Length: 222
Image (cartoon, rainbow, N blue to C red; front, side, top):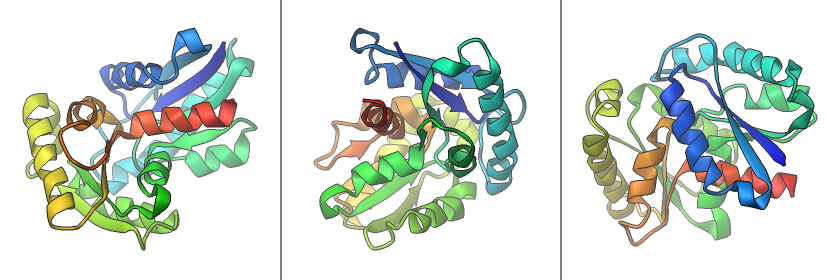
């Protein structure tokens, strides 16, 4: 079995399980894959601002170290960082000999394929500048149409999944109608189920970052 580890940079075990379950729809056991969800040992249950994102970097590194030092460490074929800011992805890439995939970089690569213009819909205004900077750093500025945010506290929305999905639908609509996006990314690992629910509701592709990262991991380990 090809073991792909998905490290969740927040401490919500339910979020880890949800993202791993979504990844398994692409990295299927019957195709020879095993997806292992790993939760960091400390930190907030949701990353909502740049301070949270920065603080998660050493925690992600520690979680990866613990995983690789364990009995299955030598079996890990790829590692996915399960947050849209890709915390510690570049540091891990410099330290590890296996492929490292960030959610944002994988989703942007898919969204921007064939010259498509893409926007991002998400719930975390405190991460807006970091997401914009990530798009620029990865070289997507010319195709990136910008970020559309849901109103209200992202933690409250996370506790009301149906409302969150509808608020994200409004943000997707704005990306397409007002910004001219040809594809829209739902910007956040914890938004994975909402991304699945919105995938077929619009005339343009609506991409979840977890499936995009899973497809990238499959490509890199094939």
